[in-house]
Length: 108
Length: 112
Image (cartoon, rainbow over all chains, first blue to last red; front, side, top):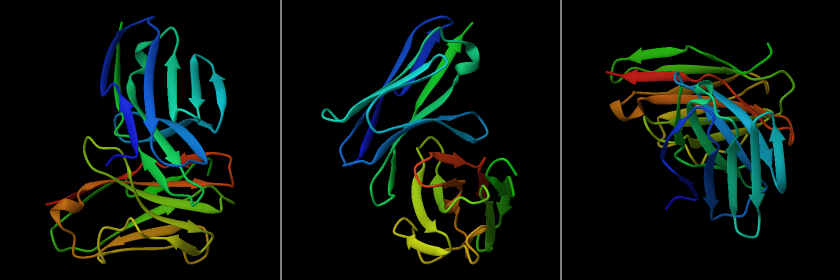
């Protein structure tokens, strides 16, 4: 049983395309996190959100608490956006649940 | 340092060998987490510290895994009598209250 489900699992896009990655979760959360993982394993935290919407540069993250769903959008995608994007949720007990990630490849 | 530092970056161990993985969190970060990430999978929670107290170790897969953070800063994850299924990337993250989490680059452990 996966507490966090992501889709799609793999995504290939042309440079400039608008990209959406979806995340659904089944547990009660205190926050939802979008993480970026590059080859080699290092993880960067992109967003932590508990309601509404956050924007950072070309990245936008939204969350709908009632529907237990979040989306990560990338506008004007670029090859350097190629990475694995991981959705994770944290509970009030500081337990983390991770999705298996979406592998994004942006082709020039 | 500016980020979470993990060492070694890569470790190859012979089956049965003990290993120790180090995590140096961001100074002042109260919370510290260890995760195990198998190839092609998302990270799986191992254990969580708040200062020096290990508040949750429910994710440790067996009693061969042991973590400590004796002074509430640097943490060590020790794996005794390593097995091939222990091969994974071990990630450490630290956080301060609700200001988000900072991850280290991980230690890639290969047991041969």
